[in-house]
Image 1 (cartoon, helix red, strand yellow):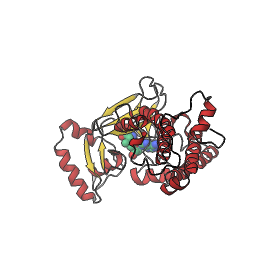
Image 2 (tube, rainbow, N blue to C red):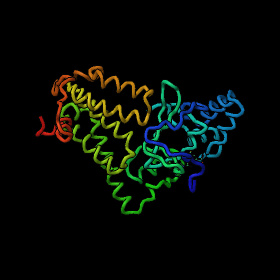
Image 3 (cartoon, rainbow, N blue to C red):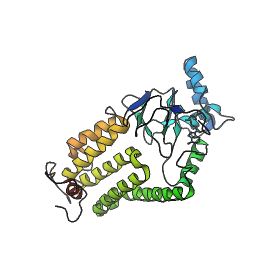
Image 4 (cartoon, rainbow, N blue to C red):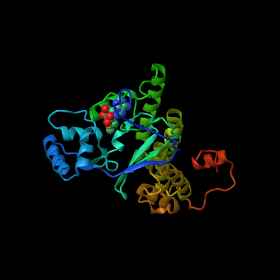
Length: 311
Ligand SMILES: C[S@@+](CC[C@H](N)C(=O)[O-])C[C@H]1O[C@@H](n2cnc3c(N)ncnc32)[C@H](O)[C@@H]1O
């Protein structure tokens, strides 16, 4: 791939939500603070691998050559085994997938399978590059700084190369998305002014659509899960079950039916009271069956988002 080294390209059309591949890690290593300790730990693990696996590991890209080549390969390629995990895995094929700030696929550690999975989050045409995201979001300058610092490369994805005026508009939206994300996650606000937190979720969905078009599957799923949590904390089982249903739909697209997180949300959709925060407040208390029937779609959305003029 020009400016990116090797990459993965679709050989056939791939529909949204397909599991493109799943892979067992070649090697898993903790992210140790001392490079020399990490280098010896990886070297010891490498010795236990077959010759083919050793060759595959050594063929991976290294943006940090020098005194600690094995650690450099891990730092360039490893994916955390689960969100917030301190251990990371490298994979023979998945590690060929380049980054995009507007990716068409999503990577996820399936703790049940103990494999990393890749799902398409958009329709991918034959011949198109398959991309995932390595960054934590935000405007282009902060994404680029993070990618350079953590992985040692200058991002040349389509989004970062937009003409200046378009990049400026995109950066403004990404800044707003980041601020809303912080606001939605504030526990004191969720307890004191849940209406504001729910409104922030609603605004976030509009912004995600404007910025990512159809590709914001992962983020949309998270927003619906946040809305679920806001409702269940305040005892509103009816809305919580609808939000969990929507969160499930998006989780299935980017992680599959067999992901433990999908299974967990699906079960919360059926029994929202299983959530640990249920009962913290009774401010919005409703029974699960109190979802209104026969409303037109706009009125249903007004009810769901607790718009003032709704029932
Ligand atoms: C996990 S590897 C991906 C496969 C790699 N391109 C190769 O040739 O082996 C990650 C490395 O690919 C390159 N890369 C990935 N995404 C990129 C992007 N958006 N812009 C520039 N380089 C990128 C960087 O060198 C990065 O450190």
